[in-house]
Length: 416
Image (cartoon, rainbow, N blue to C red):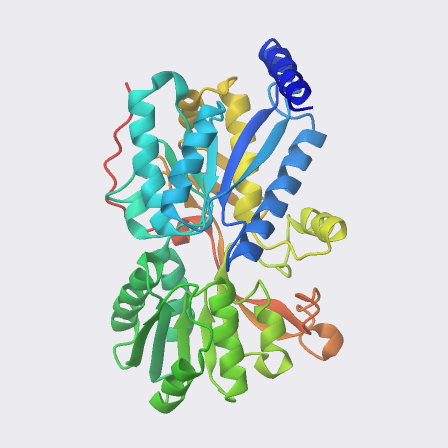
């Protein structure tokens, strides 16, 4: 039996090797945590990428009919495992690497991709980052081969602080974040923007918690409660964010949350009606945006999967990659990177731009508030419900793409 299977594999491999390039799928490796404490996050990313690829393929694919294909690779939330999976992808001849969950992983991948592309010019790859937002990745650690489709930390923090600063009743703020590069940078950035925008606000706590390890957040919530904070700012995500919010509800914590990720992965459900009007999120998308040019895509995704469409950046990264491949008339990494660099693209919510200087996407950002849905007596703008939670998103403030732009320190080294 084994010998027959081996023979079948050899025959299949030989057949694939002689297929004309026009008949071969263009594979995209997505390195995500598909096991472990954040597997739900990884699986959702895969769902949105598969949907986006299906849309491209249904519209004719790229290069006159070639199809895109998602290849999921479980990096187990580990930088070391990500490097193994990068090697796995390059060994398969995959030229497009997607990763986003964890800036520490992204930094390791940028370094590895640089080395691979220098040492193996015939097997170069492009790294498309959809969620790792630490500042160095497009500043001192920038790379020609790396493109970031999410807003960076300072962009997001500045939007949140701009919203917070307008409320003159706020005098005390508590910072709590995961103890790794993302959380540490958010803490520093929030303190700096608060000092600049509202020097009268006191930071009454600045905590870091281990990522993916805390089962009971009650001690952290007790500290927040004792501090007298009126607002918590947090970039924690996944089950950490969910458990933090659940602990707050359990202790009857009544304050406002200014967050990066409270619009997804069980957070609206955990918050419930009692939190209406008290939770704000900064994001490049939410379901109830006025004049939403992504609404049809959103509705189709929800109809197909039964889940909320969350990430415009997942959509944009696939659509812009497809556009770059067509523009380059090639799948060669160097040519596709050249086509992506400086690209302007109608994202459905306004024009976006992949800034050539640092490969940071400039795109509209929204600060939205979770409110009771219109069906439950909330504002009419809260039409679409999140997770069946009774809560819907309402835009508090919109920033157009160029309003989000901040200076960078990248000195891009481009291949000859």
